[in-house]
Image (cartoon, protein in one colour):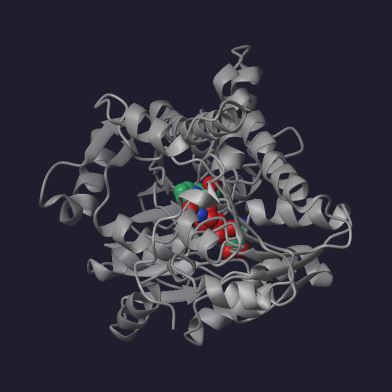
Length: 446
Ligand SMILES: NC(=O)c1ccc[n+]([C@@H]2O[C@H](COP(=O)([O-])OP(=O)(O)OC[C@H]3O[C@@H](n4cnc5c(N)ncnc54)[C@H](O)[C@@H]3O)[C@@H](O)[C@H]2O)c1
């Protein structure tokens, strides 16, 4: 098929490239000329494991192109994908203006009957508004909802092995074409959920809010663990062992971030409000998330005996590992709060430092080597559990630090190993370890 994807961000790049790998002829269009120029020079503007090779291979094969305009020939595409951003407006509702702008241009340029698949996350009813715009075209264009479920950091894998593909389409013709498009991803079993457009749009918000809710609930429990002496690890295991609940997505941490959960939870709350149906769970999830980040700031400050004049090193600036995305990352809120309290903040991230600097400027000193961040620091806070941070040399950390506080906001380090080097350990929702009950070292010290 001939396909056009609007938006060369995380969703458009992965979807367009993945579809070209399946053999389709794909053009990815973005209004950002710099982004397109870089793509045409072979520079992938985002860090997403596996994507660079895939782009290169399909470009060389002539199946994948990038442009700021819909190039001649592509006005006759079979399917146009809308993959542009839907950021929150001042009330938390999704701003769909970019989606509408793309719908308008498709209506003007399309030269034959086609589908317009909305992959952007949009409020229920947006597909109807897109259809109104498309109806102005001289050809028959049909809006379908095809929300995206990729996980940044594992997006290429998610494209080729999706848990499910949600399709909200009204006509049989649209359903048939979409079945054909996604058939290669269904060889090992049916993954399509065919539904109406509005249900499809709601499924996306419901999924993200449900996941965010699990995280926020565990975060609230972690605070209760601090107050009561319970251990969040045991609570997760015990609760998650119920097959109806399951163990995944039950980790306490510094609060969720990213370009999706925070905005989608708020957008669902705003959607409910606009229909007179309060979304209490979404509202509480959002609030609990904000409180969790404040809780971690407080934890650091209390353990330091005040943040004023102290140096705090942050390991992990991206909102999660294997991505360079810092949108709504807990590291931003934490750095801002510590700076406001008079602390000096130093940061390191394997991939996200450049994006982080675009948000916080030079107020946070960024270093390119992880251990350099802890030089002279009073505390080290682990915020993103990149693999390279999971088994650090605590002796080296102790040697370089001025202070002795390690805050493990992802609960990935073994407290006994930290304590053994004369450092203090503070996890999330776990009791303070007792230094007198340290196990003997597994390896002799060098
Ligand atoms: N990033 C994710 O993990 C993820 C996952 C699932 C769903 N989504 C949803 O998908 C949508 C896109 O997210 P993203 O993270 O890819 O966004 P992004 O910000 O990474 O990329 C959006 C791109 O669209 C371009 N754009 C804006 N207006 C345009 C126009 N009129 N024509 C062409 N290009 C235009 C921008 O220049 C930008 O490059 C959002 O609705 C988001 O909620 C994102």
